[in-house]
Length: 419
Image (cartoon, rainbow, N blue to C red; front, side):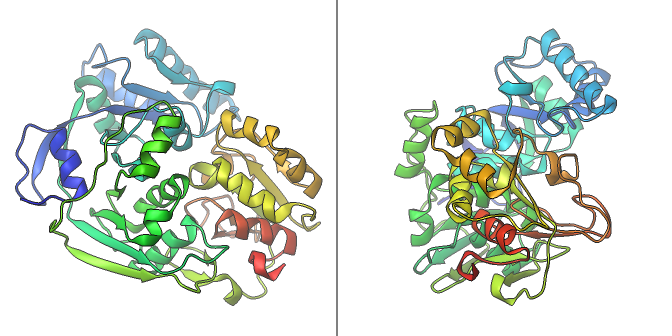
């Protein structure tokens, strides 16, 4: 029978014949990952289930990215647990300190995930890798422990929602805007345990880093995975990042979609997701009198080099408002070095930004950018729930890097056209 992209990838990792959505199948995994927050829980479960060795020391990735550098004794001890386990198990892909980046930017960049892979991770934004045609999804730490021990897991084959995006891409619109528009249309539960399969002429032309941004936020629509076909852009990206030889991969004609969602983005202005839910999406020009105290440019959603370049384009020759702290966090050491080579660090520093390390940091209210009572931020991160970035009385607006940079200059929520 014709298959969706999700069905095709899952079938390639399972001996169970997929005959319908909703079927539960056993799957072989390509990579299992965890971070400094979730790895210790997985390690505890691994030990409690009586496991002694991971199934393949080359197919486990542990990245100490959420509290890098460690902010207190508790976070330092989390890393100690992870480091000890990595050493005991001779895990190849253990990353810490200056060799580590924000996991969902770092792994594709290093070629550790690729098209057709099945990836499970103890982090909800593992779905990022769907941007390069991998079936990737987040799981709880106990499930991750099982996958580390066995090299397999069970999954329910998700129904697929086809998302077709058409029209002419306006100058300042980015992948972040496309995803926010979709979430605004279908809601935070509109894709619940579904695969979102993206297509259409706008997607065909969208750079891979924009696709990774969109796939990253599939979970914000409740989806199990967000998937993009493997095309020439994907294959070129993977070849440049240590995964040459990727084959084209797409859904079959006549694949069984649960529904189709169509978006025409012609003349669409940039948008923001207003507090306190990612579906509260409004055009940036409609957000009036929203003074801000902080801007975050970075994270696994928008910390890649194209995001840094976008922010620098808006910030160049301008100054951050004196009442705003603008924090720039390139997502990986490679992005950091590329920013240095191209002079973007000078742009950020001259504008009055604070430039920090490759860390998740403020995204989850961890450190390096906590909001106080009544403070408001514009962030290129993926969630804006109440208290997500600090005080329960603070507010977070989600936006693309160009909107975040423009807001830093304006001192209030604003788009690049407004400055």
